[in-house]
Amino acid sequence: MPERAELVERLQQSAERARLLRATTGPVAPDGWPPHIIVGHLVYVEQHVWQVRLREMASVDLPVWEWWEPSGVDWAGLYGHRTWDEMVDELVTVRSGTTAYLRGLDAAGWARKGRHDVFGEITVAALCEEILTHDHEHLRQIAGG
Image (cartoon, rainbow, N blue to C red; front, side):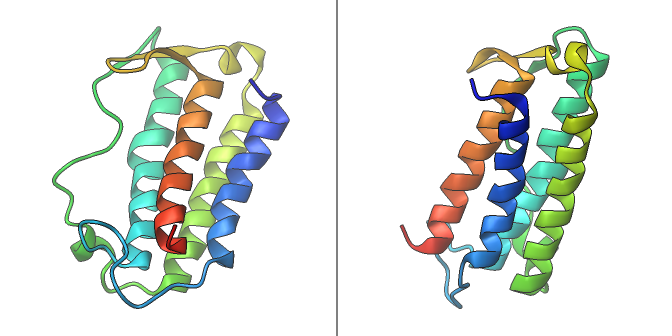
């Protein structure tokens, strides 16, 4: 597992990497999401999944989670009216909140764990790796690869 500071920096860089992508106008996701809605999805998941679970790890002894991403969300309704630049700015801002939280954890906070029904017991660092995996999957979609 990478050092804590390196992992937190990779999280911030992952969000910043979206700025380097050139948004296309057409859908790129299998379900037809255009790039700005994919970034909206990343924002939503950051706020409603990753940040919630990180904070839950700090307040609950071994919290248990069933699945990582919300279902039944009207992505186009939430983000369809937003621009690419707005969504990327929001992703970077929201991710900055996550990384600030992670930087503020003491050693005991960093050592906390949760349990996922698919992945089993997961540490804060392992959850950060899942965030990066999710980011990379969707940023690859936007980049066309």
